[in-house]
Image (cartoon, rainbow over all chains, first blue to last red; front, top):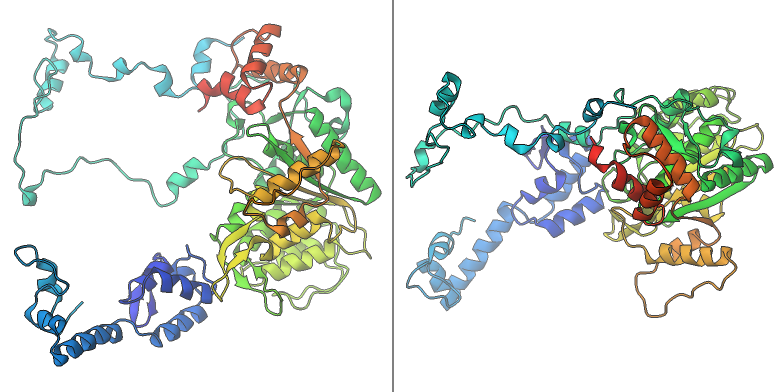
Length: 119
Length: 468
């Protein structure tokens, strides 16, 4: 078991997959981080030397990921709402924001479009 | 001659046993009232006595699923791959071939032995196994002892190697040719020749393992442009070198002392000790470098070196690795590949003689226009014709690869001649895997079916049904 940024990963997990499990860290960024520390794409967590693990944690702690990234999204929604824009209002009502119809199938909007957005 | 039943043990059971035998026997005899048949019928639910399956419509609620069919134990991690990649070199069910001789060093340079099948001696066999010269796709497991056909190209190559060793010269050669013409096998024969003559052999069995970003890499400090070492691969390679060349390396002593290695190696310790000092991936590249430096040393007497690689196209392109600044790394910036390419292009020399042999591969190979063009140009030059020019509008060319192949000798493998085909088929017949009489007619038929003697196609046409 190896800790990266406080999260425990199994030895057999791919490093790329482990990185992509963080919110707001996608395939592109993960590839760049792998290249930066010369880790090959099929490397597993268990094969990383401890030095690289600490370097990865240090690298990730400087990035806007996880709660920081979620906060940015929430701030953006709050800004729209405070300005009183249509998008802000629709978020507050939990309805689709981009002109979709609301007769049926607004599950995603109901789940996601909130002022205190979770995901 | 063998009985047909003994041959069946070579074949897959599914190929021989008709399908109807494996299905339930009571379907064939529906009026039978014997107890076992009835018992069997009762155990199978939903099947009518006539064998009719009446499934009908069933409602299944998600929560109460029927127990899934138990498939038995699933293979452990790595077991499937090990089965796929297993190499069987002998088969005790195959007939021993009378008059089959072990190949001797003198045979491989003897013109009179062309067209003869000769077996590989046991000692060399172990060495070849250690350097991973055998491939799972080859037909070794169908014969009693691993044997190879001495072709005209084999003798020519062995002679060139002999010349190079005598003159302390360097043979730079690429084995090319259509698929299934025996490129890897010719490489294996060159390895056999080198082992039998006490050369030091370094063999990279699959170049793709180096360049498809599947093994660890790390930048080598103080190199510009940046080069990369692959410590894990180097360690594996060194272990192979140590096992295969143990006898030769234990006779040679270090001419320099190596203090920067994981283990201090003083002057006059054997090269085997030097190779043994690589125990961990860290420092494996340094040990390899030190070994190479020792082998190239001018002050001490050293045997010739054979550096061989299979799958040349993989190192003649940009690799799948990325640099820290997120740019693709060229294959020839990987230190091990660079060492091979520098030697192949003649930029670095083997001071004590030897050979650099690369074999192209036609299966699972990336497109490398530069390599293809360079090889056609070299072939045209060898034939004294005008070399084809660089196409002005075509894309994907790679100047570094062309540089590496600028002055190599190319062996273009084609089909074997009819006398060679006859020697090979007589060996098949004597081993009991080829049933028909081996006469002029059958040989010609197989030779023609195999695209004018392409060995692999001939094997396919004649032996495929027996493939285990």
